[in-house]
Image (cartoon, rainbow over all chains, first blue to last red; front, side):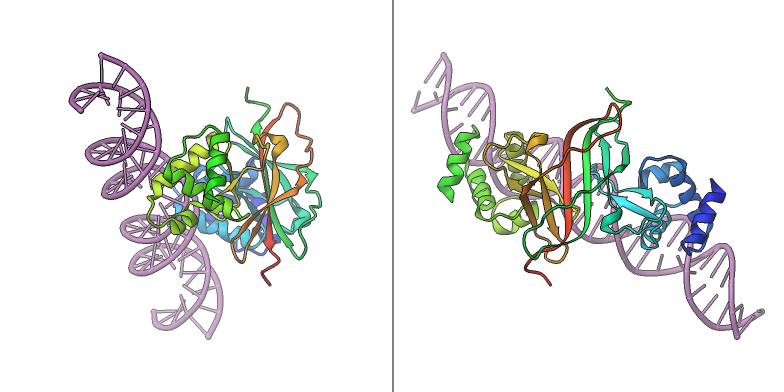
Amino acid sequence: MIDKAERLLAVKSVKPTSVRILVLAHLLKDAKAQSLKDLEVSLYNTDRSSIFRTLKTFEEYKVVHSIDDGSGMMKYAVCAEGCNCDPKDLHYHFYCTNCSLTYCLLDNPIPIVTLPENFKMHQANMVIKGLCDKCP
Amino acid sequence: MIDKAERLLAVKSVKPTSVRILVLAHLLKDAKAQSLKDLEVSLYNTDRSSIFRTLKTFEEYKVVHSIDDGSGMMKYAVCAEGCNCDPKDLHYHFYCTNCSLTYCLLDNPIPIVTLPENFKMHQANMVIKGLCDKCP
DNA sequence: CAATGCCATGCAACCCGATTGCAAAGGTTA
DNA sequence: TAACCTTTGCAATCGGGTTGCATGGCATTG
């Protein structure tokens, strides 16, 4: 997972520092979107603000995308291959109100929404809330 | 607008106190969703926590629905007639990244999203971000 | 009318995630 | 080695949301 992280950073032209490799390796580890706090707990000897700034850098270089799932904490997930975080790359997210996990629903593309005249869409944030398959 | 607010409160069985009437009248005044701060500024002589609790009450009684548009501040908008805040009543919201206004796009129903097996949808929060017709 | 109790309100304080200022550490270049 | 830039760690701050508590209004009961 460490190598995978290093390779991804190279592809995205982000200097591979120790914190960045650790954070990205953790994000790659499973499919769920993780919050700053999640990462802070996992990487307990790394400073919160360093992780925070790392995530901002990742966003800037399209390594991860952020998800506001309404839980009060921003979540971060590694971008799928070829993702440019354009509207066409957007996908739904699913937030489980029981276990607080956030999933990327990559199979469902965001539909075309007809906007009022002269409205222009740049991004979208689509979150479905409910219970995941592990929660009753 | 005051009378309209009073009537709506009666319909929803919410005791019509002065703060509640004022808050609701302000929310009815225009179609844009308003934040706690917006209301605090408009009703400058009313306490923030009173407005806050009023909004919570309104949500509980389905007078308003809240929208997390990703701006960092929850927005509130009066429920359309007949709205029960069920998934079927959901609609898209549009957040203008320039002027920070949030609009309800009532004409577009939320499509059916095929969830992974055993995932259950209860609510959804769909926000499109971009520029509204008044912003360049 | 007086006593009681409930609910709304105002004020102040707190919580917590996000963010920033600043100095030290690490690495790169001249 | 010296100068420089970036990253990191620590501490502090910011801001929206939320809560504890005392006051005040209002209605119900005796």
